[in-house]
Length: 325
Ligand code: PBG
Image (cartoon, rainbow, N blue to C red):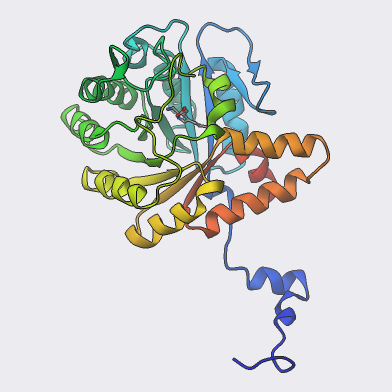
């Protein structure tokens, strides 16, 4: 490489056409997944105050909102359910007529294979205590939780989920779900493992949207410590060994180094979850006119892709897809 003045890096930045031609990272609607919330027992969608532009949906508004997202070419929908009643064991989570199962069915009927249907698999929206597993006293019983996860997985697959995405961070969850799906005749349904999911303060707004905040304690005995990178690589290795078809790093923005390391080490289909707090911070600043929503959103999504994400799960998906087409 020659140096200045023969070599002038600005030459390739002079015009939009040059910049476009030499862009190293691209982003398109087909790289994006939109999370959606469906709630039982409401007649109108309910706006989520801490997440501008996001709502808890009725079955009807879920299909309508999804239609607008699908028309913009977004790759997939990630569905969360909020049941009308919670109990200690989270039994609504595997009810064949439960809210998320009904939502999946409605979306499958409407879209067929036009869009990927991804079901978040967890217990925190369904348990009265808000933890992601079943309790034994004040602690989470890992292996008893796996039995419940197996039932949820089969019910979600039966309802039409193309991909099951376990987010509870129980040990052995991917293997348990894989064997339940295979045993239930769903060996072609994929698993997207929330493999490296951190105990993050950036899930705050989501807990308002999904009504799944822990009623005592926190999630640090199952979600990862934000200081750990080697541990994330071990978690990903385990999930791949247990049969994960794709892996996820979550959150995204504060964990781009983890994402890069996971992609480089495993060369596996990799998703990143641009979580609620990351979304809400950007939207709050944009509402105040402190940053430009469109520019900041596209820059954020590009950075997540550049770090190694094949798929970006993001509440910005609908608007971003519109800007990108
Ligand atoms: C459920 C779950 C959470 C998120 C996705 N699945 C919340 C949590 O772990 O507390 C967070 C998503 C977001 O913040 O956007 N376990």
